[in-house]
Amino acid sequence: MNNDTICAPATAPGGALGIIRISGEQALEILSRIFTKDLTHAKPNTIHYGHISNIDETLVSVFRAPHSYTGEDAAEISCHGSRYILNQVLELLVQNGCRMAKPGEFTMRAYLNGKLDLSQAEAVADLIASNNKATHDIALSQLRGHFSSELAQLRDQLLKLTSLLELELDFSDHEDLEFANRTELMELAQRIDARITHLADTFHTGNALKNGIPVAIVGAPNVGKSTLLNALLGEERAIVSDIQGTTRDAIEDTIQLGGITFRFIDTAGIRHTDDQVERLGIDRSFSAAQRATIILMMTEPGVPYPDIPIHKDQTVIRIENKTEAFQAKYGIGLDNLRQQLIDAAPKTADTDIIITNARHYESLTLAHESIARVIDGLQQELSGDLLSEDLRLTLNHLADITGGQITPQETLNNIFSTFCVGK
Image (cartoon, rainbow, N blue to C red; front, side, top):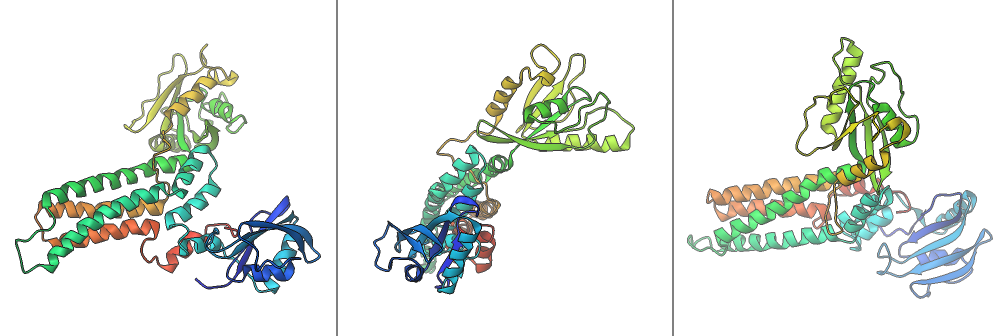
């Protein structure tokens, strides 16, 4: 990390107020050159009123290292939010020694200065991008270090095992000497593997909550699938027609119910047909149903439910449309259906750790493969040096998640390049 003092807008231009962030060794010195007050000796966590040159009256918040977001001396300028004012202030800062920050550079500095681990840094981006209560709660939990704490416990247990096995290697001339009881080692390795596997398994739930829980609406032609989609969305998203086979392709859209995002997929009506284009649409209906977490199986009086394969992880909600209890066209029964969808959504408690990041999932999968080799090696009574190697690999894969070991610069650039400039 270089020692440049960086600056960037932290808010979008055009609002009533705008914030510009500054961080680095010379942050307060540079700011003092353009502000009506000398801030080089300002106390930490204080706010100062003044003017930036002849551009605007502002409030400046002062933060001192290491008690700032980045761990460096830092400041935030609160001014009016016009694009002209923000650009003029940034231009002055650059002329006096600042450099414009790269995307995510403030958070990267926070990580490199030990204010956040890598998984917490990624949670900052997830928190900004959260668009419902579920994803907000997951990101906030990760930012507060719940996932990091869980990984730290696993690593501490693995380090104890690795240390005992490597101690045996130091006494390799004593072949019968064992510092690590193999029965206890097996029990601990299995417990660690079970926890790693559980964390990895939450990725399916986390991914659904993050991108919208997929809900496929399936049924025969003309039972009201498109009408139901339009009623749920509150807009004419899908074409409604009495002509069979109108829906030829899957139509997707999202809504929020109970703080959860649902991604609805209106599919082509399932029936026997010789129309090749309609047949393609029906094939896509089966494919969408297989990928869905929830299936709305729709019919009407006298029409059988479609015969499609259902796997054990799917929830099926059966709807008989055009009856006294449910009529999509008039909104009858929709409130009850909405509650059924909320009840069927994956549940998360405040203490749950849910994985939503593909990089974390990959590292957990690799850690599982490594610890599984340890378990297999114990069953085959392999030597401690071979077991120790796979234990070290497990540790490294877990460390990749939080950045507990040296993380390649390319990896850091890929992670932080997705952030907005002011973060």
